[in-house]
Image (cartoon, rainbow, N blue to C red; front, side, top):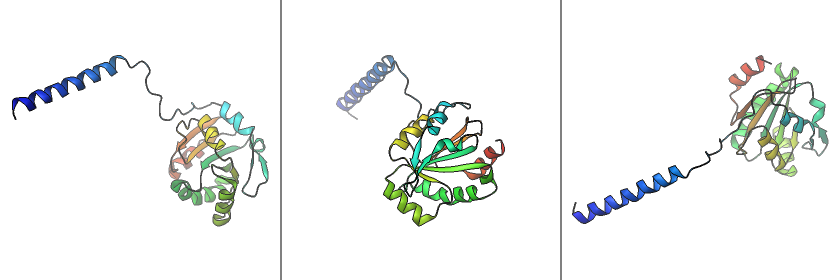
Length: 182
């Protein structure tokens, strides 16, 4: 290595060190967390959920206030979301099994009414599938889904309090343990 290369490397190293020091000293606000999950017991997003009236896959308006007083598992999903589609058979089994007697499972679709209706007809989902369109993303953000990722699932107790949120494909063993605590 000759002296010219060594000098060039030294200059580049000094520039990087100076840049790092500048950024470090001028960084005032830390980055927001990727997912700001509401603490257990938070009820404001649940109240917003109960105020919603959403059409089902056939276009029939469904007031979510009808589920007050019952434990709920609210699954935000989309037909184009692979993990969403993968967990739906297990959610259907959950809704139609023993747990479904104590728990209302609802799917809130983030897509067009046509796409959700076609999907529902094809897959014969056993729980209510509602259409929220892109406003469903905003509703999921109120529950702590800061990035709007899917699937996003919220477990709400019969007392109207958020018990737990799940980002990504559900782990049903974990979910069943959480359901046992309701």
